[in-house]
Length: 190
Image (cartoon, rainbow, N blue to C red; front, side, top):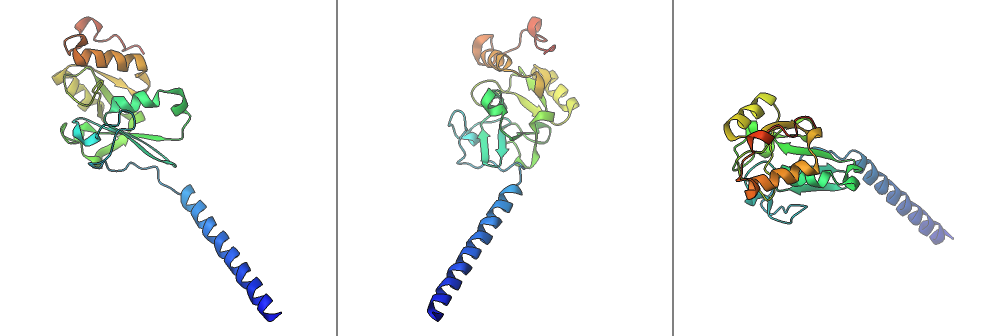
């Protein structure tokens, strides 16, 4: 009976340890940070599968409890985010602040909340496939880039799928790569 008692006590201890460890895992998941992470040379775009660091210009990422989705451009991230099923995710979106980065190699130390960023659409700057949307933390810096390279400044909630498609076609030959002056403010009322 003493051996039976030891087996029962050992089993009870193992179960208690398993529950304690399971509880630790749950607390860790709840406390998981939704902060931005660095881009690495091997990271592939969640949408197109291309190597993210092969392209110049600002990148985007969606951070949620289940992991991080990385994108080769802000336009790829926004196109993904605008899909109805993705809007339901509890994800935090980040983009590079190009006011504190160089276009060819954005600095991951300067990732900002995408929902509060200023976006410059319609520039002559090249990036990944689709539209190149330059992103900035400060409006004055965004306005300065738009003045130097063409385009217009928008806020996060002014960007929709139609604007992304229009900007991509203009940038990639649809209208000689520049925003025509008569439609320069076509989406300013969005």
